[in-house]
Length: 242
Image (cartoon, rainbow, N blue to C red; front, side, top):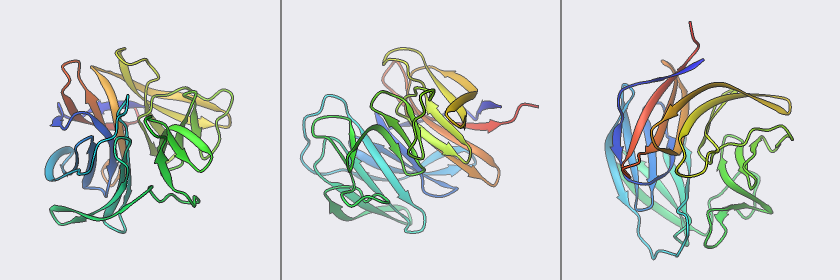
């Protein structure tokens, strides 16, 4: 299995805090200042709409954000750690329209919802604390271990905070310290063991990932912040080697 880059990527707001597919053809990107909607022209994201985020900013040491997209509702929830409220934003054609505010992002199985611990990049879901969380049953524990469907085995790989899921495969950034060479990896979980099946080095740091099984095959989009501070959205096909 291998990652095959599809073009050189397109510039994006920096830093990108999270990515989420809305459907096969539309991708959402969350930065600290805006929510951006892209349409996938073949595999290259093309800017379609932008919504500036309002509200007073809170002091944080490390910026973070999370998206929870709903294809059925044609909308997404968003949350950043430097603002006090979460937003539900609708996608109306080529417009992004705020619908309502809440204290937290609604999350399946949770009464309190998802929020950030004040002043940190730590996500709080009821009594659990995570460094990263995806609605597809993936999370990064406080010690960096990969959590799959609520389980983090003793032999679980340590991963970065950028995560995505492709059916039985998990795609993630590496667990390297900030400033170190980053990589994009695909892994398969078998019991308490997680095996790396593909990896590609990138020039910069992966700040967010989105992945989707489309009719034309598996597509992974990575937000890569280069050493020059510019972020690009780079698309990869994930293919079985011949």
